[in-house]
Image 1 (cartoon, rainbow, N blue to C red):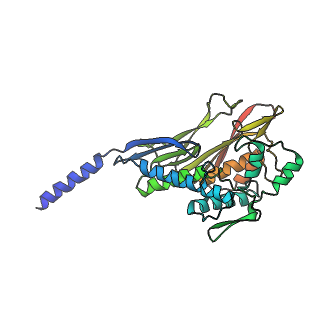
Image 2 (cartoon, rainbow, N blue to C red; image 1 turned 180 degrees about the vertical axis):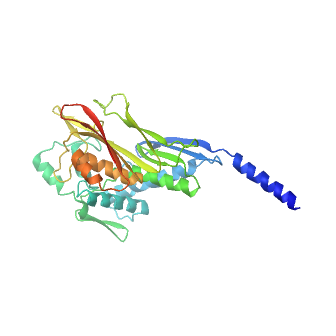
Length: 322
């Protein structure tokens, strides 16, 4: 009898060792952009239903594209109780604001809309108009009390676009880990969370886009990086801008001045322990410029950055900070 059990044990071990991780990929559209999820699973499980549920929950909470989302109701001053997703995004945004001395500000929405970046219905901006709208900006003027948003001015609005996609990538990653999957790459609109490795032991390879001269220019890769157990997010101004009277205005708005920022930084790719924080940091970099961004990041443990910028001679350069 013992011999039978021993043989069965050997068979069971052999069967478990012979199982090979299967590559599974799921992609589609969410939050006004694309997503792609790649993971390796020995049991070849399909989590399409669960992924769609997570995307729907995030969309129903913090998406500005969803008329009935919690954030749209908050912005319309409706009586609404916020959920955990909303509170998480609010806290990430608050942390980023405090870290950047107010350069990052989730209440920037009125200025972004006025400059024409939300719905392409820009106003004719004047100094008086900018000063007036700036009164509606200030992260310290908004709080969550008893699961409800309290604003100093009812005309203030919130915008979590600079953290929501990174947060979603983290959320998908946490779900996969809850199922025992620790080798995956989640990409939500370019905000990436990469965990583990490929079955051959190689790290995940991610391309950093080369800054384009025009919005509709063909995409190409400036450089490639290898990562593991990191969030990776790139923020850039070269594809998101508007032109008025022959002047190109960046989509990054300085909440203190009310005007689009001006500096030589074309894009910033930040590598951090999670995608939500990498998302925030990449946005901060594009708001403050290369020199200030470099100083802010130098004391951040586990954070790396790739800056693509124009030097004094007008040449595009790449600088790696770690």
